[in-house]
Image (cartoon, rainbow, N blue to C red; front, side, top):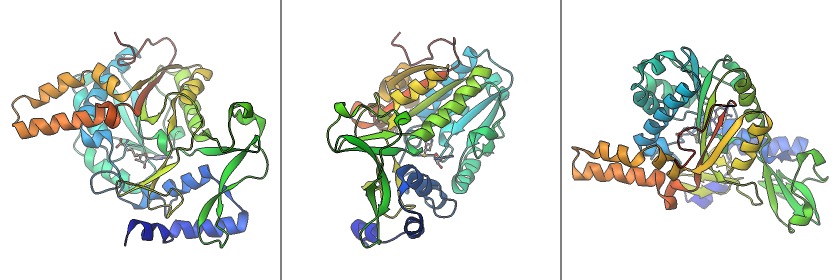
Length: 372
Ligand SMILES: C[S@@+](CC[C@H](N)C(=O)[O-])C[C@H]1O[C@@H](n2cnc3c(N)ncnc32)[C@H](O)[C@@H]1O
């Protein structure tokens, strides 16, 4: 079946959502995303082989082991900066296939006390991926624990890593129509056979703090992730009690701005975001300015964003590439260099992906966030 024929076919989740919307009316894009990715029965991460060459997309830790190794060294330094606690949480949000955590732990063996002091927590919604993470980390010296939500993790000094997690968090969209904002919702086509964007009937409440209509043009779209704000607020309330640090890496924009970034990917190709939900990965660009502002409002410190390529080079990417290439055949060394180029070159993942660090107050600038 061709991609466009498949996009026409209803998925089980699409049928469920059509029935729901017939009954209750249009739903927010945030509710749509939450179900498309995490519906317990038909959500994408619950049912599909998402990540890797045989999945729908790939991620930096799956491309090059150097990504996780450099982050492992970053975390060891962050541990020192929070006072080298003898018991701390090492938390990964959305650990995918477990490759990033495996590479982090291998690199962190340089400081055995770090590994001994860490309680690894994996925040993962998908049973399929939990199983993969378990297999990947079997045999490592740590015994990871799994959490369904951030509140499940006991309060303690914490180091948090999130790679390509925040882009999964639901967004809402607002559109300029006739000089005011209207929310874009997921409703039904005229014959109720497919999902379609429709406009909410009333303007959103003033506390949503959308850009001034005078600064926008007809048809402009503004996105807001209340889910990301809530998540960060939870993280920051922990940070005010216990010295902690987080590293968030994702694709997105440095500054809040106008634009529709909702997208879906299937079989390594773009896919219509409202077609066959549950069979494609639906994400949106992360608004790094909103992330930093939320953290600062909650009393934490925010560093960055820094482009991923620059961040990795500051952490020693080139040195690590040369070390790994030593003694390898020319073909293997080429593969190592190609992987490093994919994660760091500006025309590949190096520019669109960015890193931001959120820390408890008064910890100093983390590695990679200043050009010294
Ligand atoms: C794009 S994958 C990234 C995987 C991994 N970090 C990597 O870089 O390869 C997103 C991950 O976040 C998880 N995830 C997404 N939304 C989640 C949520 N609300 N709660 C828990 N896990 C979630 C997915 O199941 C998956 O493991």
